[in-house]
Amino acid sequence: MEDFNWGAFLGITLGIICGLTGLWWGRRAAAKQRGLDERFDLIRTRARASS
Image (cartoon, rainbow, N blue to C red; front, side, top):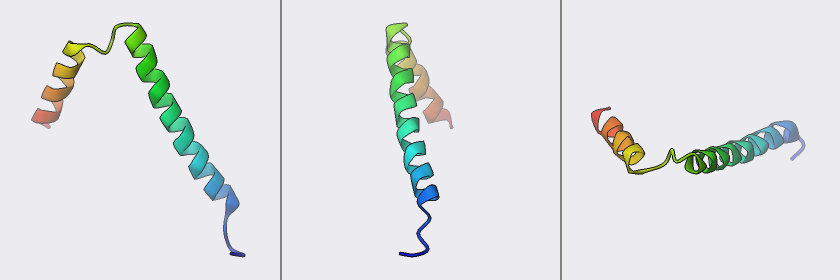
């Protein structure tokens, strides 16, 4: 365990935590602005089907 890079481990861990927090925060903000409705689901489903 002498060669364990704590900086990389900390960076990856904090990156994952910040990314998930940002995803949660963004979806919460979109829901407050009525951006997550059935039309959003339809667009997302069609976009995935065509790709």
